[in-house]
Length: 262
Image (cartoon, rainbow, N blue to C red):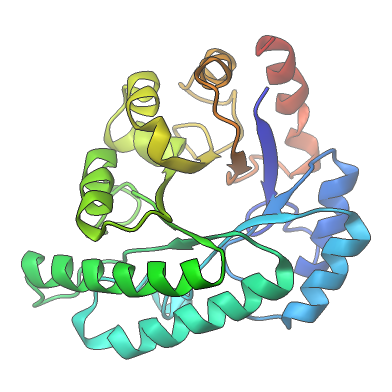
């Protein structure tokens, strides 16, 4: 059975963010991740992590104005300075929290920006970020996201991410493979994971349709978890799904899948 981390941005949202750490530990999770920690002082988050006895295994670089619909700025040619400042801020948080992986959201290609300009900006920003993170002992991840949920998102396919890794040429740059997004864009999950496993440093899960708990949709997670185990993946899998009827009420999938994954 793969190692599961609770995504505290989407899970336990009936509680204040700082109260979700203890709830995740009580539910049996052995680690946590979240999208953005920047609304809270890093020291306060670290206190809650310590109290719950949980490591944080992933969070994102700052991604622009999320409330206004921005989903990353790494491909925005006019936001390079802001992106670089965000890298520094993310490293500061990661060091305090002991987080060894940071995810870079490419963003939606802005109106009027050519594909070539977006690509060149993204590559240059990843080289800058990878170098800065390497100095801090942190891995940089890039995540393909489906363009049904986020139209215009620059990075949407696994092969595209692998080609970007080749072009950037940084040994601490890896793929974050979100099974929900991959199912929507590509399917062929088993073969894609096997093909790209050496470059995958983190996975995330949700079922499709609806992005709810595993077992609520079309993805055969029992078989897929066994496949991931057979491949020898030893990283974390973040549970980044939208609970259909409350986090605690929907956690039975973990027990069911643990039995199926044997």
